Every structure is written in structure tokens, then in C-alpha cells.
Image (cartoon, rainbow, N blue to C red):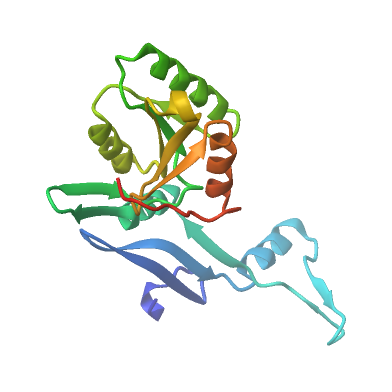
Length: 210
């Protein structure tokens, strides 16, 4: 800030800004308040608020650096930075590429056919198992393609599809949001696999896109 823009307590103030789609806006202000606060407290309390510098042998009043940041703008920045409209071959995909550890839902379990009770039951059981390790949800209210897009839009990093083959081979398909690639994983191992991916303990190794 210029001298005529400074608060009475500040020797220097710097703003950290972010370029939103609507223009630049302040995210955080960092003010060098020098010893203004502690000297004011000293006057008010009558007590010396100093520290002893063993190197110089002097008593000094510490300076205060004050960062001020609003949570709402910080969250908005994360969302704006993660939002993308991706042009695919036949459609436009809206995706929120938020980091897995920040995503409110880490995984969504989706039965490929909601009119197959055995698939629905196995998918719901997997959802219960997943919830023991990460925030997860179940959804069967649309076709698998629409369910994928719905989860992409809210930033869910992983979708787990339970299909008819799952009843035979005991495995499910995990789809990764950003690359849209897939892995076939044993149903018993899916919860730990998702938890490890979210925590960064293992890397994604998906193959075919979905």
C-alpha cells in the first residue's frame, strides 16, 4: 500500500489477490503492525511486554505481523480454480477438479442396472463398507453416463460401478474423475484402495477411459 493508504498502526501492508472470472479481488491482507499493539498494551497495563535478545543483550518489544484472510473467498478461490468445462468428442463435460482430500464426497457407488436387486444390494453393501473409511454415497437415479457426469460436477474423485460381472468375479470398476480411466478391483479391496488414493498413499493406475 502507498503511505496515504496505510492504517494508522501499519508500517506496510501487502494484499494477496486472485484473478476471478469477474476480475481481481483481495484474498488476504498482510500488515506489518510493528510494535504498535504491545506498546499500547504496555501503556494500558503498566507492564513491560518485552523479550530479552540473548544475542544483542537488549530488551526489545516484538513486532506483530498480521495476516487477515476470509474463509469465504478462500473457498470460492478453490472452487473457481477447480472448475472446468471440458470439450469431449460428443459433449461438453463440466468437472470440478478439486483435490481428493478437499472433496466433500470421496467416492460414489453406482449399480450399473438399478432393476437388478442383487446388484443394488451388493452396491449398497459396498457403500456401507466405504463409509467406514471415507465419506461416500450411493446413487442409482439415472443411467451410468449421467451418474458419472453428476459426480464430475460436484468434484467426487472416484466412482465405483457394480455391474453384472461383479456377481461372478467379485470385482468392481473404479473410475477416476480427471482422467476418466478405470481400474478393476476386488470388491473386498475397494474401500482400502479408495482410502489410499484419497490420502495419497498410492498412485492411480487406470487404463481404459469411461
